[in-house]
Length: 118
Picture 1 (cartoon, rainbow, N blue to C red):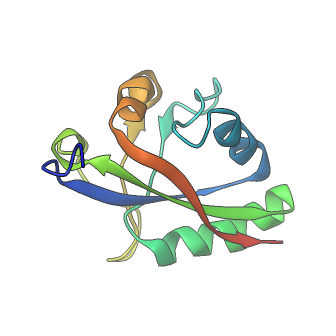
Picture 2 (picture 1 turned 90 degrees about the vertical axis):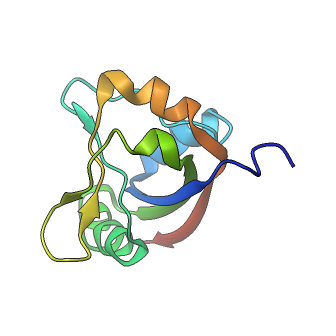
């Protein structure tokens, strides 16, 4: 298997229906460019936290919430310090919008849809 020697880190991303459609359009291999009011892309390091956001926030704001899971080259991620956005398990990475293409290039495999809430 190619890339077997490269360790990867599992990340999750809670998302709404519009962003999910864009990911589908990108063949589940990349995140779409940020909008001007979205200067940072926030993947999270904890599935439960992603579920809470998708279920409690995205459903209320977008009518549906989704949780995606994907693998990223671990060495590449060391440039983004883990941010604690609240409690001990509320951990995010903050990827500046202008670095998203580079981030997408380090996704290993496909982005998977793992939960949905309506």
